[in-house]
Each structure stands twice: as C-alpha cells, then as structure tokens.
Length: 345
Length: 169
Image: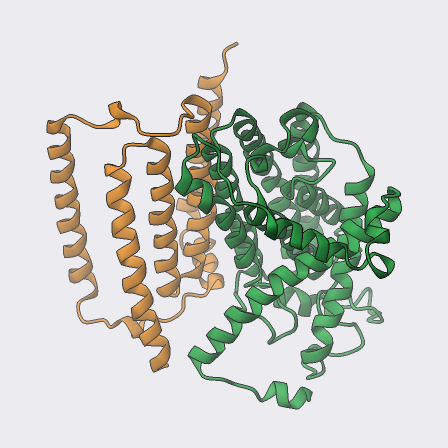
C-alpha cells in the first residue's frame, strides 16, 4: 500500500483538485476533533461540567447536539450593520486558516505545497485573520464589537512579533526555512554523536518553544489572553452580533487554527512527522507520517488547552507589557545566543 | 508543463481583472473603510501575481508587510478615529484634483508599460525560472550587503524619529 501511494502521480488539474478537497475536508475535521477531545471531554472533566459527560454514550453526542443547534439558528444581522462586510468577515478569517494548511507537511510528499520558505509563509498568512476580525468588529455597528476588534488587533499585532522571533532560533539551528527541511534536520542530526532520538529542537530551543506557545495562545485569543472576547465586559467582542452558521465559522476557524499552530510547533520543536529510528526517505511515512504528526499535535494542543482552562484572564496592560517587555526581549536574547553558539560550535 | 502554463494564464487574467475592479473601487467608493478593504483585494492580487511569476519570497513579504501590517494599521486607525458605517459625503476630491490624479495615472501607466515592454522584449512567460529564496538572500548578504545595511540604518533612524515626534514629554 505504501508503494502504491509512492507511485501515485496524477496530472496537474487532478492533483490540484485533490489538494483542494483534502484541505477543505481536513480543516473542519481537525477543528471538530479538538473541540470534541479538549472542549467537551477534558474541559468538562477539569471543570465538572455535566452536559458533555451525559449526552449520549459517554457524552459522545454533545458535538452533534451543538452542531444541530448552530445550524437551526436564524441568520440575523444588526440593523445598522454594513451587510456585505458583515457577511464576508467570517469567511476572511476562515480563509486565512485554510491557507495555513497549505504549507503543513504530513510527510515528505504529503504536503499541498512544499515551499522553500514554509515557516515564513505560515507566519505571514497567520497575520491575515486580523483583517477579518477588524471587518467583523467594524461592520457589526455595535460598540462592544468595535471595542473587541480594537483589542483583538492590538493583541494580535503585539504577539505576532514574539512568535516570529521565537521561530528564528529554530531556523538558525536548522539552517533552512522549509518546514520539511526542518523535520529532516531534526531527524538526521545527533546529540553529541548519539542519534538515539534524533535532535528535537525543543531540547535547545526550550525558551523559543515557551514563547511560541504563549504567542499562539494570544493569537487564538484564548484564555488567559482573551481580552478581545471577554464575556464579562464586552460580551463576546467582535463575535457578539454573529449567530448560527456565521458564528460556527468563527468557531471552526479558531479551533482549526489551534490545530495548525500545534502542528507547526510539532514540526519546529518536536521533529514533525518523522520518528528518530526510521530514515526520512522511507516509504512508510506515507502512512506513518500523518499518524506521528497527529500524536505530536495532540500533545502540544493539550498544553495549549490545559493553560486555557486553568488560568484567569490578563488585564489589557498586563497583556501588552508581557508581550513587549518580557517575551520580545527574551526572544531576542534567544536569537543572539543561538546565533553565537551556531557559529562557535 | 503545458497544463501548468494554461493554469498560470487563466489565473493571471482572473486575478488581474479582480485587481482592476478593486483598484477602481478604492478611489470611487464613498466609504473610507470600504476603500481600505478594496485595497486589501488589490494588494493580495499583487501577491498572487508574484506567486505566478515564481517569486515566492517577494509574494510572502508582500502579504506580511502590506496585508498583515500596513492594511491592519489603516483599518485600526480608521476604526479609532471615525468608525461610522454608511456613506461619507465629504470623502470626494474636487474636480481639478480628480483630473490631475487621472493625468498622473495615465502617465504612470505609459511609463510602466514602456519600461516593461522595453525591458523584457521577447522573453516569454514560461522561460522565467523559479527564484529560490536562498539565492535572493545570498545576493542580499553578499553583493548588496552595503545597501542593505544602509537601508536598515535608515529604517532605524525613521523609527527613532517617529518615536521622538510622537512623544509628548
């Protein structure tokens, strides 16, 4: 079966069609998996929420119930809303999520576009969702939405920087910006001559990993960085006027983005789709690669959601000073140290 | 290869048409927020054209700098100062300003088309090779090292200048 997959080389139009279909199927699936496992199961265990444990056998039907609930709701827009922008905004957010998946490698050849500058592409694309958020906040014609969108924009701009800077350490160590290249570099290098577990960069770039995860948390506007959607003061921020399916799109985009960022963290710091004792050229990765990557993604996603369900919200000024005064200087120090060691060693 | 070229051509004309529509709407719309959003369409179209020209580094930089930073600052600024929905009647320029603008537009179009036709002559679209990002960075950090460093010092000076002007105390 692996050989069959390796020899499959469809013509251009067919392969493009397959890629589009796969991405548009994978994105909602990953969002639903994260929603099911973390939001419904882990969170309800951690916070003793009854619903997700009782609906259906072992609470497995809660997702279905929530999905049907969203689809039943009427699609309404506020009176003064700018209809056109209001309706497009969730799609802009979803589109930036879809584009993230273009560069994610699930094995050497199971990738939509194996870009030379995969890391750069991913970081650039992830900054596009801000436009959708600002569109949503402005077009709702509601002061809560506007406040939420302004907060979101301020936060996303601030945490974009530590995220980019945290990744540079990995890029320096790997010597490439290609996501596949980074996986290969981690798989093939050795720790002082011992190649038992390859060389996952989390060992040397632990600081970078920490900063990256913190910045991801902020980019997703999840607690403790959820000022933009703080329920207790601005109701739900830029999402407040959205109902039914359009709200569901925001929700799907948030969780699919969480999955994509967890996958990027897994690729950059945990060795991606490769396992140490199997060379990267092996045909087994056509089947094994996605499974390995998925396992690593679930580990990283667990950290992200664990923090989400545990810590209370930062105040706006605390949130900004954490980014500018703590994370960015730490990331810069990390870059300098990594660069010096790269030249010296 | 042929299928790729056909796809490239079709994509080029679709994106170009979208960009032209977007560019016209940027200057004709009566709502400043809509103008910024049409500009998003034009700039992302430019990024897509760069990808068709196999210049992926330039394309991604275009997305990161123009869409991710400059447009977001535009929207942020507009929303902080005047956030009303609906049309804004005092947004239009005077007649004389419109004619000068149109004149400059035509002049730029002529200049750009002349330099493009003169510069590329008979080079065909498919002949262009993929510009690897490593080659771009190699030439920046070897051949063009001095201009690159001078540019970064210039940007640093601009940054410090902006802070000095913005500070009240």
